[in-house]
Length: 256
Image (cartoon, rainbow, N blue to C red; front, top):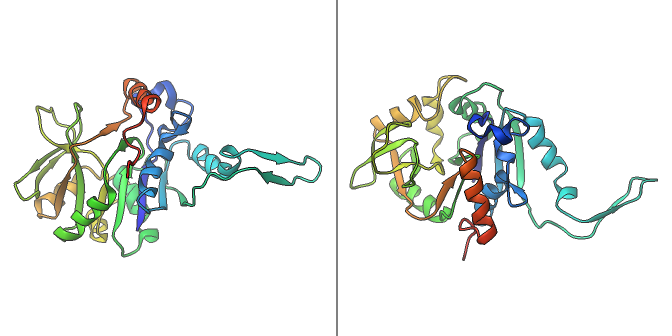
């Protein structure tokens, strides 16, 4: 199954770092957070990635173009240009880097990937959030309820899309970034059926507004409740927190 990662935003609330690089390239430990996100999926066998690029897309492209040399020791003969690698990173991922426009909104970025995703279900997440979510359980949940969309619901002390969920895990209402009091919020880690593309109008469409709101009203949006670790990297404090986790044993690393 294909995995979409939205990695084209400006990341203005993390401007200490994103003035020079896109947010998905900000490092946790010695790896970009984008790599950590891919690692979560890859550990469950999902290694076919479609990265929706925008702001400073060339930096992400250059990282993966040079991925082997950046992540391995090697020798190079400057006379003939021959390179010999001493080791191998072990990552056997297929990465599709697609420029989806500088100012395109999240829904528009996904719409631009439609020709690559075709008529299959697919996974999607943002380029700035980490979790110890069990991807296999998420997929099983999605297949069982047979609705158009699954969104992972989490309970951090944060300020994101509020989900009104009934006792059967059906999302009754989706509101992006209201004044929170308590409850479940949008944690990313979606699974979509191809019908989502019918709910996206154009580049200006925010995925978290009309498409998800309309899906909720139609009874086509289900919530997978994840009450274990989840943390986004929305600001400098989040960046420092994630790096402290990395230094002391990252909870998003699979333990099975």
